[in-house]
Length: 301
Length: 306
Image (cartoon, rainbow over all chains, first blue to last red; front, side):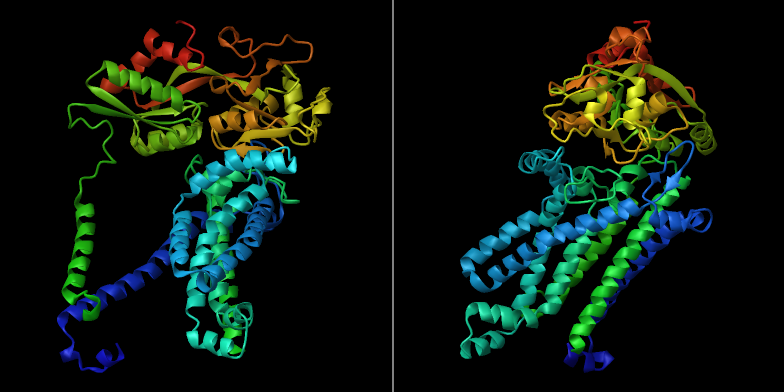
């Protein structure tokens, strides 16, 4: 491509100019879409955000009474904690499994087995989230009741397991790519020094691929934070400060999904739901920013 | 590029097809705006709203499509508020509503479409109080329910109701509720607590009448409310009294019609303006003996005159 670039403009065929313009348009459009969505969400919520909403109460009160007739309260603390706790739990389950599977697929298994594995993992990624939610609502619910003697199985644990199952395929495929991207010369050099296969993985591959692995984990986490349908069905959808894996909780996304359909447009409650949208945007932005800084920090070392 | 077998020209062709496909989508006739469009021989009546009523509306639609050749009915759920919102936008002919339309919504609809929504009571629904079928309880009073569900309520354990619940070792009452803006939630809250007290947070707010019964059927510690038509063999409906010394009534046809069962409500359908043509014929059929027979068949309560 560099050689082509250096040619004078007259030598570039017309078709290539067309392709380049279209590809550039595709690139720019994604930026426009993101800003467009942010603008829309912000516009819908801005009226109440700057005129009337008690931001302190919004962020620190666990009392979520958007439809009270006598005393409306819009506190999202329980919802924020719900989102973070279920995501953290999901990552505790998904990261070891996902990275372990990626290491196995990339380093230890035979090429034939690898192909089968990849197909199955892709299949796992193709299951719609509402199906996961239904599995949580029926199968996992009873399993948790039976195993933990819990009064009800629609809990943070249930939602966390569902989210873990949904983010494992993402983590596996990205982490595997990251491991594959480590040059073979690293492996050969390590083996030449007498390292065992495990030492190669632990001492050479993981440090060499850590940027990609971190990206895999963060994308998995982003998937968990943004997931809606499965957590709506599996976590019990209950405004509660989470006290442990067996408490039933509610997340920010599920609240928007459950309530937006039935609010009157332009209503206070409607605007608050959009402010939750802004909050989710901010959370995602901060997570991405931290990821960028961490990766940059690793690079500078 | 040539090495991969993908020439510039195939690439251009793909891009051109891609761009044109958008143009074609953009040119297709708009169909979202016309309500009950008359351009085909068969008129489509769009019907949307209450989750409680969706099975009923579906049954009506199926039966009605069978007996008439001039109209067919499209039913979708989503909740009372969704139906009213669609009515306000003018995208449905009939909105199903398990609560009465709010004054603000009425005003918005009139403002937006130029037609005032007309109200039709098409049946009644008794909200049954459900528990798991193993729960050793048969009766409950409204004040007890208010203390179970209300903010700072005093009843949180099954033993507070004087019950030793063997299948629920934690003894804790798990409250099953609905998302906070469904018609069912509004009605149940007002029936129990009036307009000034709220529900205690921490209930499981499920999405849909069916889910409530489904979850209670799997959860021995649970109590919940849902339409009486959703009962299954895994759950039990409690008899309800308005006060501790008042008589208890089970939710059934006679008690709802006699207005002795305390938590029953009308089910509404709203049309945009005075209904005309096929919409009018459909509403008349729903209110007729034949339409009301389906109300009873689905576990709701038909209008008294039939």
